[in-house]
Image (cartoon, rainbow, N blue to C red; front, side):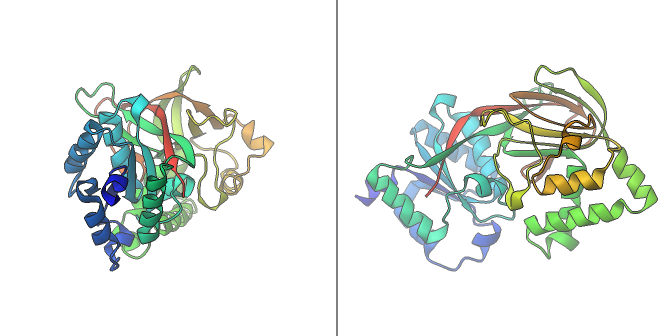
Length: 330
């Protein structure tokens, strides 16, 4: 009975994630014993990709991901590569990483042994997809880099966001804080940079970007901040996007802030509280919307789910949405 039940889902377990590294319980050994070949703890991305390809060949319809945003992104990337869009598996996200923005919106709601017990129960009842939230992954492609595979995540950022993440990755910060707190500390450090004349001029000027969102006219200039996401909720009530397309979940929410933006402190205070006053929405230096496709050309690195990527020699990247994915909730 157990074999037939647990054969209905696979578990990708990241033993190097922050919370799993300190887990001394019997959860992981028990999951390995219970799931057999469906317990996957790959040593690197290549092995994970091979494991997901094998799951796709067996038409595995549910994959549990025990890790942080980076692990979820790696699994989404492999799914996008090996599963047909109409046959995407359902995902259950068990948050145990440095950053868990994705789980904050579409997490399973349990982790560890409690999560495993609940998943076995749902599998036995045939109701793994009984309660789901539907979202799309965010695909990043390099159209002029032949042979470079696409990557998939759910939260993308460039310009000032990349600078903040690079600050957060410094050992002096990362070794003393969880990644989510490190981002907060880095944000405060970034704000401090704005109080010195030289840093303020450099940061506020932004980075050169060419942007085309959907069918809108192409925009070219310096960008202070660019964010995009297929999530529908962020932690602590933060929501920097507006003009949401009637609750659609198959589009990319984005925010573009031009270089040298006016009233930045007031705008940041509003967006950090999920508020979008009329003056902000009507200011052309602050632009937000929802699109199915966004084309960008940039000279500086960008971030996807906490990992820093280069835009490549041409600088061109394309953002799009995957087919809808069911995220299981307990």
